Amino acid sequence: MKKSDVKYEAYVNILKEELVPAMGCTEPIALAYAAATARNILGELPDRVLVEASGSIIKNVKSVIVPNTNHLKGIPAAAAAGIIAGKPEKELEVIADVSKEQAKAVKEFLDCTNIQVKHIDQGITFDIIVTLYKGESFVKVRIANYHTNIVLIEKNGEILKEVTVEGENEEGLTDRSLLNMKDIYDFAETVDIEDIREVLGRQIQYNMSIAEEGIQGDYGANVGSVLLSMDSQSLFVKTKAMAAAGSDARMNGCELPVIINSGSGNQGITASVPVVVFARARGISEEKMYRALALSNLTAIHQKTPIGRLSAYCGAVSAGAGAGAGIAYLSGGDYEAVIHTVVNALAIVSGIVCDGAKASCAAKIAFAVEAGIFGYQMYINGQEFKGGDGIVMKGVEATLKSVGRLGKQGMKETNEEIIRIMIGE
Image 1 (cartoon, rainbow, N blue to C red):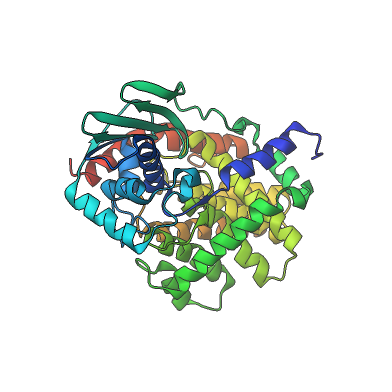
Image 2: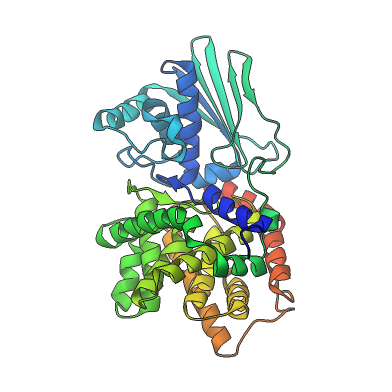
């Protein structure tokens, strides 16, 4: 792909837009970002807080630890952290810098402040409205469709900012419809590494650091460590164990940042860590590793685009298939090897549901990565799942379309039922 090709610039921009740093699970962090923005505009601590959130937000915030809060969980904790210690200019790192005194103040604020949580359905999967009240004054901030997309700021009835929300379109971002597997592979093969070095270099640094922390520390169910205890000599075990370890740490209070993919830190870890672990173990050049990471990340983004940021479909599946594509490429696989790897992986694990962010995400990541690697092993052994096998269609793009339909439309009611189960309805 030539630099003059419109898709070349688009793919570079998509990587820059998607692969950004976040500290903590991105849904509670988005909530903290909204709360910090509102607090900044209100100009004083509120005496009452109303958080209105779509079901998918409630699901993804309910069980995950909010970083820098001494292991507090849930929506009120995320809002309180943003109000007390948030720096809105840092966006998804809004609560990355919290002092011990501030962490203590977060708990005190929770104990003495009325924080109401309300489930709303305005036809948007990703929807957060935070309203802070101080006496008769109030500030309302709404985020819709993706984690930093503030579409409304209102103070005492005066509209300070308003962006029309037209369904679930992600206005302001590079057109994701330009993505397809053939061009993604071509881009990965031909991209000038200097155009992606900074964004991918940061992903390597951040995500490998949290994976190492997950292996060395004691986080959640310690899925990564359990996997390594089963077979510490196997490279394929290590690839999935290190990815799982990153999630172990991230879901259970580790305060290291990650580089996300498709709005998710777990997906960012899954799309990157196995590729880096494999490349380093095999002594593969840095240049080829960067190309494999570009392939893995863009493949994951391409899969998630029709599904959306949040659904009942586990995003680790898409990222695991992306990692499989990257490992196939590192192993010398051509375009056919890459697309068959992706299709095989999706045929295996496309039924895993998302029941929110929590410790078990690490185990789902491990199996998604395993499916990606096994999908490639199937291909090099002359085996594949073919069009007509369930949701597998003839051709990779047709298969991705059917999986997108499953994740977006088919699992809509599944998502609602998961939410009802989780909130006890």
